[in-house]
Length: 143
Image (cartoon, rainbow, N blue to C red; front, side, top):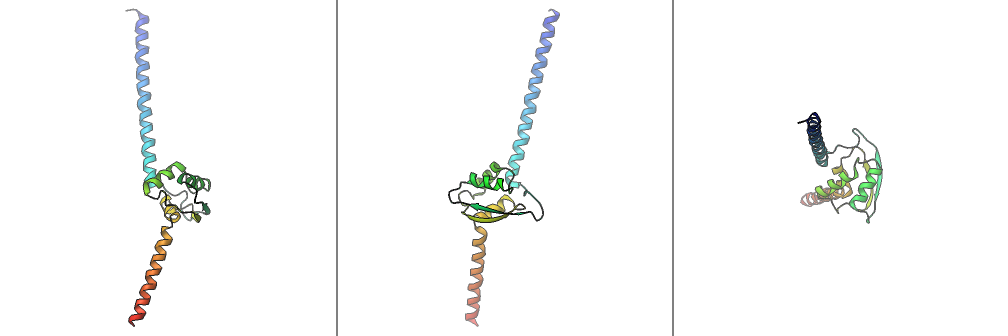
């Protein structure tokens, strides 16, 4: 075997090893970023900690979940609109976000914002108040 063939064989092996290392590193980085994104779906922290800032958000009845996520991203309430869309779909709030005007805070999590925009908080509060009123009426009748 001549020296040039040996050198070419070593170069070929070196490039093959380099290619394998690059592929393995790429898969490693892809796995890390996929895990991070998946983790953020369930544990995304609020944009700010502490008190945060109130932002007025108007949701129209014709808006899709993606449109709502775009508005929230523009207002600085969320970091990633596509992450919010996935959070809405996984959480079960898809299609339940109601039209209206909401005051949201940058210290709220995506789950808290979804709860407010689906008006679950107001329904729960109204139910509680109705129950309290009913209990008062029952107490007054028994006295």
